Length: 200
Image (cartoon, rainbow, N blue to C red; front, side, top):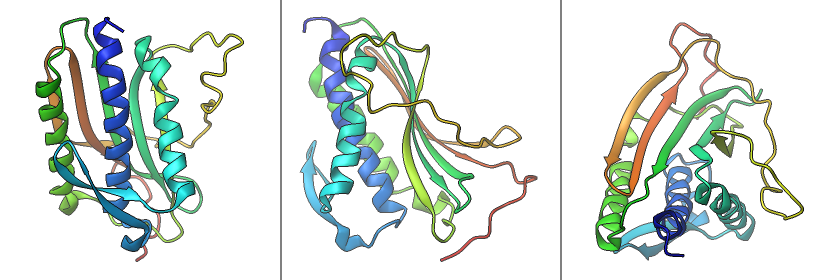
């Protein structure tokens, strides 16, 4: 793959797998013993010990690769829900890959800074409700034309309940450079909306 997106996309997918695992770890959805330390881009990060959890995150992010290569993926979100399936917090990775030369070392340095920022931002995270759920969701710029191939079979349209008012957005980190533009921000429900009961 000599096209820049072909060079950047696999690195981005691998980064998303690690970053999403870090988000789930930091939110305390599972006991800390459910994770183990590993080294990634010269940083200590968390990896799920549970095979099903690790497979879910890996398969969901890996399935994005063909769509990222085609420039179809606009945002990837980790959404945490209340028991009645109303979103209470969203971690959004907004991305654009531009056709320009890639310097792998620079790209890795930039992506590493996102993982560092995540680890020091826990004070602005919202407490999760009891019996919360979570999922990985991708937002596409347009619906892909899926042929006979199996790409995209893991991704299905969602009817997730949305907030009635625009969410409160908290920027965490952004990268605006060639060949990758990436933004990481939090979305919370507008404070004027009814809030789910907070547990824990």
